[in-house]
Length: 94
Image 1 (cartoon, helix red, strand yellow):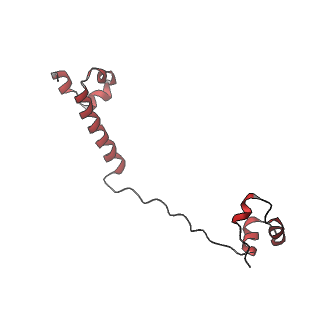
Image 2 (tube, one colour):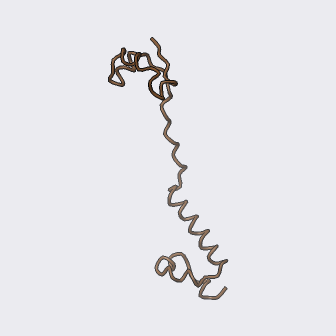
Image 3 (cartoon, helix red, strand yellow):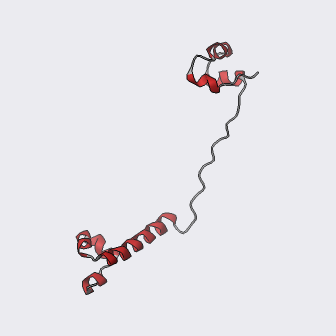
């Protein structure tokens, strides 16, 4: 490794990215590892990642509630059962 390559740091490459082309592979690997560590540190801010939001559990609804949620009549829902592809998953209750 030359003295020039040894002296280059991440901030040097930020100012002049063209210098990366002249770096030996081992020095690029060191700088890449440093950059990755910096990105992880900045992204996490030293704290663990937040938990993903929990989805509302699926639940069955009675026909009256389904009619209200969908803005349809109970009679329509009873008549329309079996006419759409989603009907196989729909179970009528109440």
